[in-house]
Amino acid sequence: MSERTLGTRARGKDVFEYALLRVVPRVERGECFNAGVLVYCRARSFVAARTHLDETKLLALDPEADVAGVRAALRAVEGVCTGGEAAGQAARDDAGRRFRWLVAPRSTVLQPGPVHTGLTADPAAEPERLLDLLVR
Image (cartoon, rainbow, N blue to C red):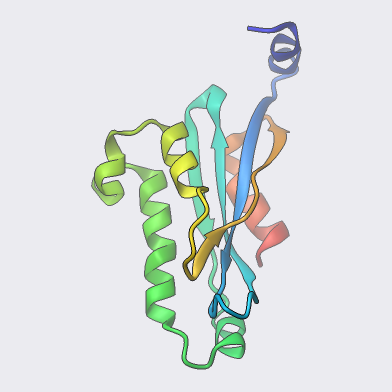
């Protein structure tokens, strides 16, 4: 462990990473809005996602949007983070691999934003805090 890491852990905080999940109803238009957040903390082997779909925004950007499909995609991300049967093949991967797979760029209606970092004493509280701050 580096001196810097020891200093951070001594203060009771760990580094965490997060990325927003963006809904892009019509990829060709490039319009998007935040619908969830992914959080990963390596020190605690923690990964989680929290989502909130604003159907009004979705339908304002694309009146013909597949609301059920977008909702299913958001639930799938939460399932991969949770692990177990809900994660499918990703269930065998550690938290870091699942996070990296979820934040990999894709050309779909549900896209991850850039990865950001922070410090936290409670990684499990970060998904809800960030959802309130950046999505709702």
